[in-house]
Structures are given as structure tokens and as C-alpha cells.
Image (cartoon, rainbow, N blue to C red):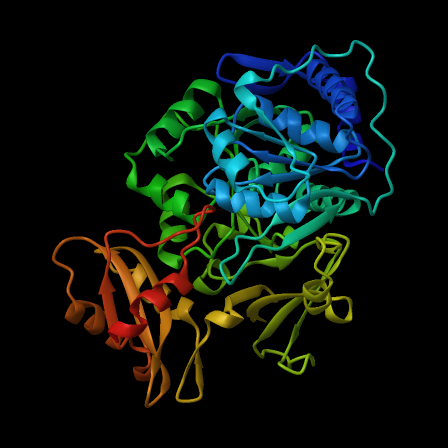
Length: 499
């Protein structure tokens, strides 16, 4: 079954209703299907055959959702890349994925051409010079595919080296979409869904179940995330759901002035990184139980565990710091360094099995064998099950600080400092230490007047002595990758010589 076939019923029932809107443009479900079908035929005329890759290096816009779904409809493989990447980084991904076509913005064409290597370079199409074809009046069915055929290659952010292409099959995407509707958020045809995050990432994955349910989808394309503008859009368009935000966006919502005209909003799906306890507690107090947490990664696209909105209301600290309950159709086990199950209540690497788990890394059998050892995806995250059976993610395995032979999880320190009223952002990491092996360092973005002594005094009252930071660095902003994740490795390298 082609993942595009999930839209069949909504297209039949909702053919005259708006599927996609962007600025002054919109497509009804019938127009969306007809345009995707016409675009799939056009791709075939460009010498693209089943299994060929098409790379998207685009900001959110009107063409993006059509290209995304049409490529998979045609039995091709979509390779979405974040618009904030440098063309050299995209050229590396193109060299690995081997796409037939690249859709991008005109401003990037020359830089991509110069950075691409090899004799058989993909054709680059500037989206400004490309017109979507007229919709077919009688669209054929989606191209028949094997369920395990690749549909989407998601390139990891590359925080520990070159990015790897997590290959998601049609089976994976169907399972992830059904999993979303069962556990995270049951989109309805009456929903107005706002996509504020890049469609190349989480929002694109949530486009599939929202379209499958016949909801209206509004594409947001601002270069910078401005909460007031988002609230204006919610009020003007009657938005009911925001399909995926990062925790940093929730913090920005809290910094904006309160509004009484956004009561239509009933759901905000968030994930991609852990959220500090103080932030999610404040968000629920202000906006209500509309926040739906997910945990996952590109290799199991946001499908490992979830904490529904109702579980946030009146929840204790243990619940709010957790990643919630294991998702439908997903198995999770925790293992030690010898790949053996840890005792109940113990900490271990989170391993996942199920139809949501990727086929493997594109053209990287060694990395695939390591990640999928024994048929389980080894996430690299350390976690445990709490007293309520919820999964708690403690940290990335390679981020764990080992000081004097004792494991220290950076998130413990970050959660404490995030509660300080003068701290806006904080990240903890380890630095080499001749006596202890590693010592704890923190980098903060704080309000004027915050001092190192104030940081240490605040930690002294809430952390064990061995977890207290030895090094405190104040920055105007924390380094982040194209997906908004803070780059711990960059900070470790930057401050290693200044300890």
C-alpha cells in the first residue's frame, strides 16, 4: 500500500473542502489530489522511475506539501532537507542520496551547482520558475509499491558527525500515521491545522494523518518564529491544532502577552527535545491541557512514547518530566552496555521495535547493523520507567557526564537552572578534568545581573555536591543546528581549552 492511499477516503468525502492553504492560495481535496496526480505524471516524464529520489531544499510554502505527497504518490522517494542548512551541507546529502531532481529556491541554485560533485549531477529546479501542473480531472490511483519500498529519507541532524539517511518505508509512514491518530492526536475533519515548523521535519510527518482525516492545513512560512504573529493567525483563521512545535517555541509562547482570542486552539503537539518542568507547568497553567507530548527520533519518526493533553492537567512532577506511555504497536526495552535487559527500575539505553522503525540508513550497512542490532533500534538515549510505568528520557548516552566514575545526566542540572527566574536558556555538558575525568559545565543565556555565584548558590540548594557545575559560561545565545537543537558538542569543543 502506498502511503498516499491513506488520503483516498478524505478525498472522496471532502473533495470540495480546503485541504491546503497558503497565503492567498488554496487547494480543495479534489484539487490537491488532481495536482498531485498531474505532478506525479510530470515526474515520470523527467525520467524518474519507481524508487528514484527527489530532494527538497525549500522553505515552507504552497508547493511544498504538494511536492511532498506527489513524490510518494508516484512511488518515488522524497528527501526533504531543512531550509536553514548551508548549500554545501545539502550538496553532501545529495551526494549520499543520489536524487534525480532537486527543488530549491533560486538564491541557492548557483551555490548548489558549485558544491555538487561527480559527473552525474541532479537537475536543479528553482521553485520560483516552476508552476504546479493543472490538476487532472480523473486522477488515477497512487502508484503501486511494496510496503517496504522506501518513501522518505530523513537525514539526521549530524550532531555527532556526518548526517545519516534514516530510510522510512511506506509501511513505516502508515504505521506512524495510524499510531499518531491512535495515541497522540485524533485529527478531525473540522480541524484547522497550522504548520509552523518545517515541513521537512515533524510538521511534514503530521501532514499525512491530518490529511487522512480530512482536516484543513494552513502552511506558515515566516523566517523567524514570532509568537504574536502565530497568535494572530490562530485568531484570524480559527486554528484548532498546531502540528508540532519544539519546546523552545512553547517558551516563546510564554514570553508573549496573554490573548483572549485564541480559544479555538485545542491541541499543540510538541517534541523533538525535552522540555523543562517549569516551562511545561507554566504553559499548562496558562493555556490549559492542550499540549500533547511525543518522543521519538528520525529513525522511529516521533513514535516511541506520548503524554496526552489530559495527562498534563494537575499532573505531578514525575508525570510532567516523563516522555509518557509507550505508543500503540511499539515495543520498548532498556539495555545495559552488554545489550542485556536492565533490572526493573534501572537506567538503560532505550531500544525500540515495531513497524514504525526505519528500514535502515541509506547506503550505510555498517551504521544500520549497529543501530538495528538484534532487530531493535538502539536510540542512544538513556532512560528508565518511572513508578507510573511511563518512560523517562534521562539523556543521550554520549552526553552523559562521567565524573569520578559516577554518571551525571545533564538534564538534571538543566531542569534545576531552568527554574531560576533570570535564566532564559541553559545547557549542561562535560569538560575534561585531570582529577575526575570530567567535570560539569553549564552555558546560560540569562538576564543582566546574573552571576556565577548566583548560579552556584542556586544549584547548591537543589543538587548533590558532585553534580554542581564547576564551570559557568554566559552567552548571548546558545549554538543550535538547523532544527533548533542546542549543539552540546560545539560547546564542549569551544570551552575545552578554557577550563
